[in-house]
Amino acid sequence: MRALVTGAAGFLGSHLCDRLIKEGHSVVGMDNFITGSPDNIAHLAGNSKFLFIRHDVANFIFVPGKIDAVMHFASPASPNPTSPYGYTNLPIQTMKAGALGTHNTLGVARAHQARYLLASTSEIYGDPLEHPQKETYWGHVDPIGVRSMYDEAKRFAEALTMTYHHYHNINTSIVRIFNTYGTRMRLDDGRVVPNFIQQALRGEPLTVYGDGSQTRSFCYVDDLIEGIYRLLISNEHLPVNIGNPAEISILEFAETINRVVGNPAGIIKQPDLRLGDDPQRRRPDITRAKEVLDWEPKIALEVGLQRTIPYFREKLGAA
Ligand code: NAD
Ligand code: UDP
Image 1 (tube, rainbow, N blue to C red):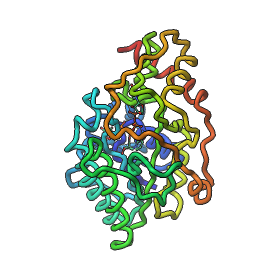
Image 2 (tube, rainbow, N blue to C red):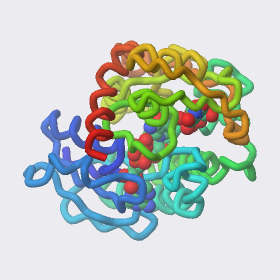
Image 3 (cartoon, rainbow, N blue to C red):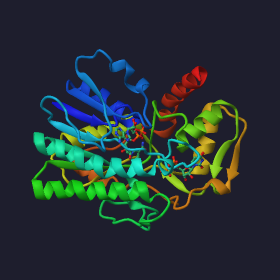
């Protein structure tokens, strides 16, 4: 297979490129580095199975040669407005990556009659009124809310993907990704995992937004990539949740990181920094992933953190 991966220099995209190459496939990676980094794909330079094209997916995409799969991962992904890399600070780029980028990548899939995989998100469920979230849940999203440039772009992307499937008969798939962590996350994109790990490594108190009672369910990147690869090679067209159903409050998560790192500085609650529309609870129902892909996560939180922390330690040392 020869696959186009957009967002290839990002956290998930770069791990996906590695996995595809490991499986013997060739990859055309595409990125404009708006939130990603060349460091994440530097190890692929000179690899005959990897071609990189620097390009903004909001513009018409041309890829030389035959493409068998298109995987659209390009989009800012952090909600945190304290970071310049958060999507609220890149609102138009975020909407264009989700809308125009999805249109252009679907166009590539159509031209090549390729398998298509859209990276969607648990954010399409908004601040959910159903818990845990099944794929049949329609969501609870404010179309003009503070996170809407991301949530609604992804909802539009899903609608466009299904439209290409039904109208143009394209072999599409949609993964709804829940919070994932691991190496190559950007240190300064403001997401909770890089924030907490680097605060812990510096011996500072961890900044818990609000009272920390909000929950998330954290999936280690290797588990996620396994699920996404299985979806790619399946015949599934309907959305599939991929994430870890082990739910934890942000307060407990902070305490876990402090324990694993050995940080005595504790936590500091920052009620004012809690985002508007910050989902109070989030946990995937992964019944479909189990049934359709025979997939479930294998890596426990503390194990995944032990694998992730050395990366941040090294990056901080270099910073
Ligand atoms: P990331 O910021 O590390 O990676 C995104 C990549 O896309 C970056 O390299 C960025 O430069 C690139 N990009 C953005 N806009 C682009 C454009 N217009 N043209 C070309 N490249 C562009 O984020 P990530 O966590 O790896 O997220 C990847 C995808 O997965 C995103 O679509 C995101 O919405 C989705 N997702 C991630 C998570 C998660 O927990 N990491 C959860 C849900 C969904
Ligand atoms: N959060 C926090 N401290 C931080 C960063 C984030 O308490 O330094 C909280 C945030 O309010 C949210 C959760 O952690 O409730 C997850 O935030 P993240 O930015 O990782 O992404 P989200 O899951 O909201 O998309």
